[in-house]
Image (cartoon, rainbow, N blue to C red; front, side, top):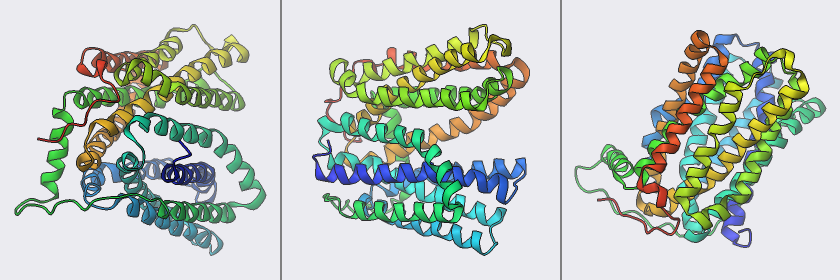
Amino acid sequence: MLRLPAFALFWSAATLRAFGGSVAGVAFQVLIVSVIEATPLQISVLSALGVVPYLFLGLIIGALMDRWRRQRTLVLTSIGRAVVLAVIPVLLLTGTLGFWSLAAVVLTLGVLTLFADSAAQPLLPRIVPRDALVMANARLGQSQTVAETAGPALGGTLLNLVGAPLLFAFDAVINAVAALLQWRIAVAEPRPAPRAPGRHVGHEIVEGMRYTYGHRTLRPLALSVHTWFLGNSIVATVFAVFVLRELDLPAWAFGLALACGAVGGFAGAVIAPAIGSRFGAGRAILVGRALVVVPWVVLAFAPLTADSGVAVVLTVVSAAQFLYGLSMGIEDANDIAYRQSVAPDGIQGRMNSTIRTVNRVVFFFGALLSGVLMTFLGFQPTMAIGAVIFAMAAVVVLASPLRTARHDDQPDAPE
């Protein structure tokens, strides 16, 4: 894949931004907890601000990405991130960083990330042949996994060595370099036809939703991934509390278990293209959807307690995280590649934004539901419910035409 010049530039920029984001993520946590000494309510607000842009702007920006030049959008968002990140050292050095200024930074970065994500997914099919989309997404997934694994450790080290101002300045430079790489991508993006009289962006959003949920295979794919996000919001919320509080796992062991999940994700992304090629996109997605049920069933019913011992708890939790990551690595590359290959270019932005926006709405309310379930049922019953929901996501694939879908299916134009 890296022999394709356009993809090599796209991948390099995405990898740099992933590492920069993971490194800076540590510094953001330190700023929130130690520098501005945010209250629990303020921490929850800052966390929500990362999702808010998707809830209010996701569908609109998705529609715009079917009319704007996606490469130019990527370049401008990287430049914008570089500028915003460069502001943080200035605020730190002048002693003016507070809750509201940090909230403005987080919200702005969230909006820029939304633009970047909305442009990147529909741009990839323009720079990569359809038969190479799974491999391309697998390469991007591998980079993301490595960044999420090594980035926090590197960020913690750099934070101790150079301090937060230089760390954010470093991430700003990374985004500037990413913008330069994205600017060099050679891609033809035809100008869309002008809107018919009386049509506006609202009509295009509705058209994208109708296409997504009216499509023979995209509809079950979207419903399956929405269901998966509901299950994931529940288990992701309960996991850390269960492991750290109920099982009393030390922080170093918790970090090691998470690292096993990252290793599983990398392994899944490595084998995803082979599984998709051999069994088809639908069956590859089904494998990932079914496999993710296993680790949460194990954690829900395993007779684990704080008295089981660190070695036993760590072994079970690490194995569960590995399978969890493996399932996501397998399905992500095949899921995204199939969407990119089956939808025509003119509706890619709206189709992807429709699925992505609903996913985040589902995740938001699922996380709230998880808190209620933990309070009234306990940790392990809550994970069991998450496992059942994951199983439902697999059943949607199994019982639909998506099961036999292949990556070489021809794109279907919107009606």
